[in-house]
Image (cartoon, rainbow, N blue to C red; front, side, top):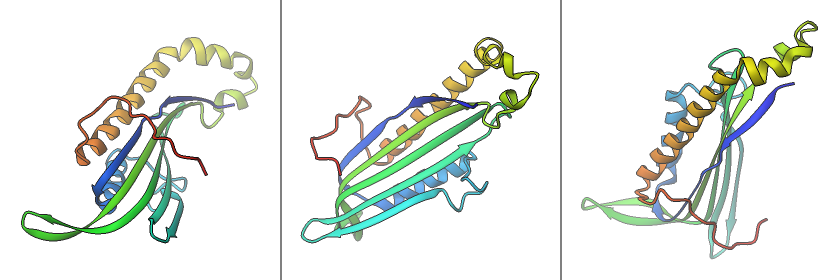
Amino acid sequence: MATSYKIAQPEIIFQDVFKLKEVYELIHDWLNDEKYLDKRGGDQFMEKYYHERRIQNVGKEIRIWWRTFKNPTKYFQYKLDVDFFVIAMKDVDVVKDGKKERANHGELQIKITGTLVVDPKNMLTDSVILRPFHWIFERVWMKQERDYHYAYLLKKVNQLEGEVKTHLKITNFMPQFKPYRPQY
């Protein structure tokens, strides 16, 4: 049985003018550059869920879920889940460098979840010979390698968070608290 370790779950909350398409493409390109794949092994179907709802006099509400993975070795797998949640998004016109551009105004929440999976193909637990020693392999023999992959994935999650915050020009790298809002 594969063991999963949730690495980090940073959440970015931004409430101002932004371009959702640029943020979307930034994260998509970062995942492609880092060789994260979708369930089918490509990059075309990263988006697992998309929901858009228009609310009169408020704007759009958009939910997007991406589910990606990467196999650095045959005993370890990195899973990276990115959830977008946009509230009260309206299209606005802004002036940038003397030119009028279309942008979005609203609240953007991005949650990035990194998970390290040990033995994702169950090679240790499916083997009749190795099954009784699975816990020894995982907790003793592969501990140093597991700690390395844990730290590496944590660094990559923080790097993606930093890229998004830099793009949105958020200078606060301290944890942001959720504003009170009823959950749906």
